[in-house]
Amino acid sequence: MKPTSFFKKHSTSKGKDWQLSEALLETITHVKLPFTSKNYYAFCDKYLEEDAHEALFVDEEEKYFREIATEYDTLRYLYYFQMQFPDSTTFCDIGCGIGNVVLYAAKMGFDAFGYEINTLLKLLHKKLKLDIEYADILKSDISRLKEADVIYIYRPINDPRLMNKLFSLVHKHSKKDVTIFYNYPHSRSVRGFQTILLGPYDDIIALVKL
Image 1: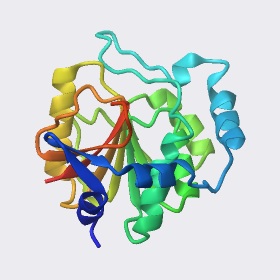
Image 2: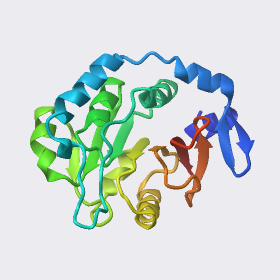
Image 3: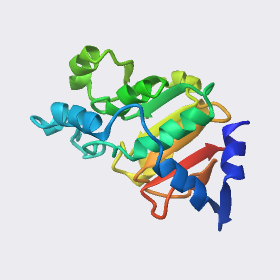
Image 4: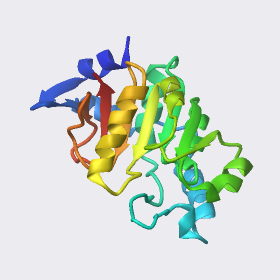
């Protein structure tokens, strides 16, 4: 079964969007991750507590920036998806920051890599043995994105127009059945993708390429 079929099978129509059934959302809420929240947040605190710039990167135009860390519960969506599609194992985090999601996606069983613009994080990524491409994804060769079965995006650009450009590039360079988990979306409606609401709020959605 393809990811698109999975979402349609377990979703109900809500206007132009789809929404996961309450039963499935309840199941995902109780997914047991292969690491504890204490372990995950301890890692984030270790590399964020002394220097916020390890997580927060703002250029002169205040265009690029990072939030502190993805919530532990958000990772349940990724792990549930990985369990349903064990052959869909290649994961990419666009704007990966310190690499917390890349690292823990690997612990979930994904073959994980990321894109990051902040080259000051190279030493940390090397220490953690993470597979990271350093690039401004709006201007660089992102042909490797074709490898990804799952893409994670946590609000890497502080500009709705440029976010739309990013999604256009992702649509162009990603494979047919790619699924994107998009945290803190600037818009629910993204051209070229079907939107699936993953909860009662708009803080995280899934986008399936049309």
